[in-house]
Length: 67
Image 1 (cartoon, helix red, strand yellow):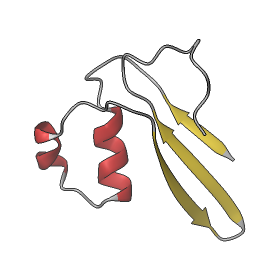
Image 2: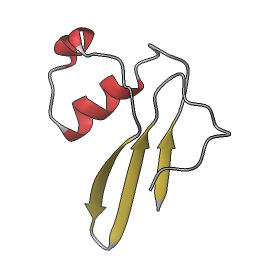
Image 3: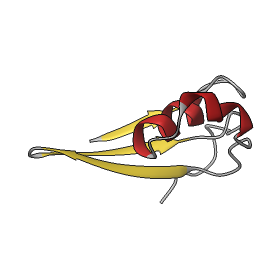
Image 4: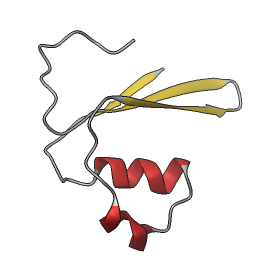
């Protein structure tokens, strides 16, 4: 299952992803750089496979989808 994280710039999308997948302390997310390209993360829970895509805030949805 693919899950896309899309929203306005500086809304906290990457911060949420980094806290969940990289175990980053939430207080350290203020120092993160803006996302410049689509990044993906894999998560498996029992028999379910998830793929999260973190999109930059200025991503144009009319562009080609990520590979």
